Image 1 (spheres, one colour):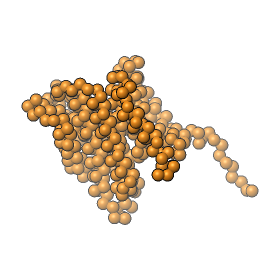
Image 2 (cartoon, one colour; image 1 turned 30 degrees about the vertical axis):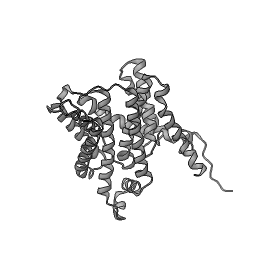
Image 3 (cartoon, helix red, strand yellow; image 1 turned 90 degrees about the horizontal axis):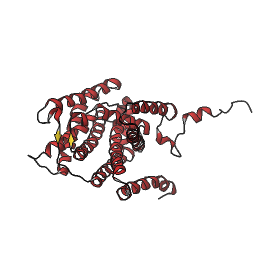
Image 4 (cartoon, helix red, strand yellow; image 1 turned 30 degrees about the horizontal axis):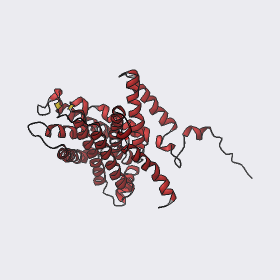
Length: 323
């Protein structure tokens, strides 16, 4: 392995070792916070597959999170009593089917039209869950309690690691990654060179849907009680979008960085000031600063990547002139 390659891998290895050791030294409070970081890192990466690599801005990814959560909650009810691990494939399959069926017509849209279509999808599923009797309606569902902070931390961590490995292989080390970026940058040109753009877009949509379904299932088991507002709220998608944007769209590690920064900030903000809307204003200010000065996200601060736009603007430009 080359020295450059090793230098790039060392920070990733250090983060993984740090996260694995968390239950051994961190208290219950910080273990729960880092459990949330793992979940949101996976969710932000899932949105980044479609939004960052595919160029399709989705406002409906909470639907897939909710599908996974309801699949686990419904199958773990006392009358069915499914094992938790058996419920996850069901949620994944349901999310994949919904994404494949609805992706075929909606992915023909672009820009705001696609964003509105996905938002409408999420709202429709949320309304269905609210009025349907088998989902418990607005009263929600209760899941058998399993109290183990360490278990849920490792469940979220393993799910996040698997999600990132799969995305890294597919998006950075395979032809699929080149195809989806080609479709994002110039779809007519990609079609002209023989890429089946419809198939590639649906595959990306399905990939970005099954990851939230897994985290939705783990989340439902973790919180033990859920209703449409807790797993199908538009705020869930909003958080995915902002975390991916602040971390770095179209990058592999940007969503994880954005998720860690924003979720820890959110939890500390709530601990200091209570559940207040001032956090929303703070996030808005952060987004504005990132767009102005870090257009490539926080990941661009890493050595070897693009630097602060502000620094480039302040540095004097070389004067052109004759020798």
